[in-house]
Image 1: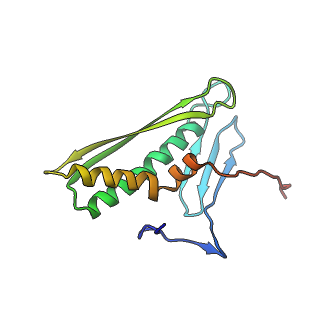
Image 2: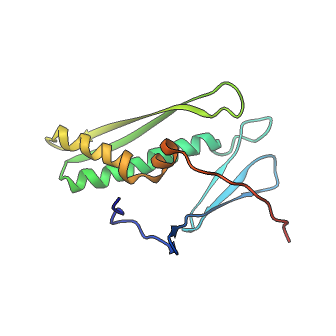
Amino acid sequence: MATPPYVATSIYGSKVLAKAIARWDGDKVRFDIESASGHSAAIDEPPIFGDDTAMRPTEMLLAALGGCTGLNAVLLLKKFKQPIKSLEVEVEGEQDKEWPRAFLKIDITFHLGWDGKHDKESVERALDLACNRYCPIHATLSRGTKIQHHHKEAH
């Protein structure tokens, strides 16, 4: 599988590593999140557990999927010389009613606006590639991934 031209990879041996740190701010359940690329976000829960000051972790997961497929769609539509004017990626997830309330189904809808005539076949190809070839979030969720957990004592 080809690497998208905009991706700067960090390769150690045969592995490409991505990293984020979620740091509890000490109040209720809010976590501040920092990425290896230097950006930040936050997660929280509604009262009584949290203060409703940020997205829920499940919403962030859906947002990551929408952003990842969306940015790849824009790059591909431009590459295919399609006159895209606007794009909104709506991501809805149906969750199990029982804990841990895993997602049973996720639906992605691309709302596209055009600045001129577009080729429907090129649009479908771009969206398919954006989802099924270039988005690591989509690949992780659709293929599954091994997740391990462990702990270290803080100093």
